[in-house]
Length: 364
Ligand code: PEP
Ligand code: MN
Figure 1: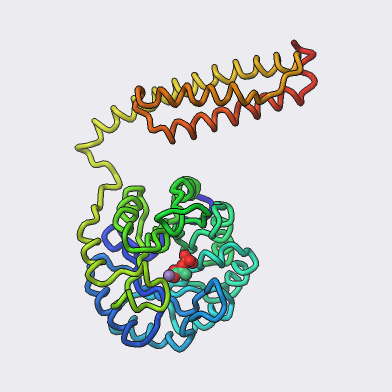
Figure 2 (figure 1 turned 120 degrees about the horizontal axis):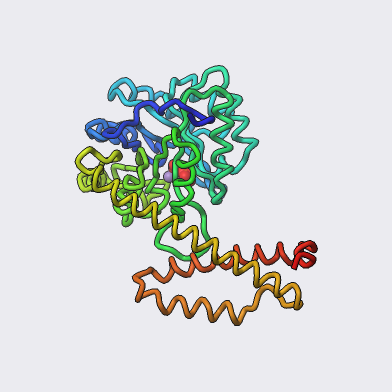
């Protein structure tokens, strides 16, 4: 069993996988009509709403604060929905717990700061409720899992991770880079912590939400956190990415929920194909080992004859020669480039070790 947590997050199941609600609560009618609509969806698990909003620049709408908490209590009772709010300070936790909020979540800007996370964990100690933790803004998996650990150590009964993408500098149609390998690695390290994907904050607009949501489900993520607003164009925060009721209904109708566990009828065929993959991976490992053995020999030669590790002309030639063959081998160029760069990086590291190590020369 994983050392971090063996407790499943309540409410999220295979069929009820949706955490949805407005980015921020702006007024009573908006909070209520959104809850009324969402409570009718069979996929609905938890109502999310921002009450304390972290804003990038001062002077912007920072949420209604505790004034909105009684409305959330009303939603719990009237629509029988568990509710989740974002907390960023111990004071928020106290107010949210006093108001009987079912779930709390930590935002991406809070998770970057271990002092804030520890303060929140401390405030939860006497009265813990389930907590969801967004990934930090920067792609640092240890910061993300570190926040989960701080909460579990404080006695939080169940945690979930929310994948909302990572800040990146380049122009892109997405607001935040998904970097899927990071949540996948989190799942590998902590198989018992459910991962929920937040396509709204990854996309930053409504356009790519269906594709990102489907990909998340196909990558075995347990839930989706999606922002909805009765009139997205008039939303005070994150207007471009909030879905209208109709848009959300249409997206949910088109999402494919695929089998997580391959059933009997698939298992023979899948087992056979997986066996082939296992064999090919063994061959790949053997080939890599052979390559690295030659790299070591070259390293020893370079050391003896005082030649630099990096011969950039040779590196360029090697990359372009391999990339020219990408099409023939039906391999995506960008994938092949990344693979060759990784292999080369490891080769350089090996040779650096050889050049550092005086004993290798004596052994020659
Ligand atoms: C939010 O969920 O509205 C929010 C502020 O998200 P994030 O912390 O991912 O930026
Ligand atoms: Mn938002």
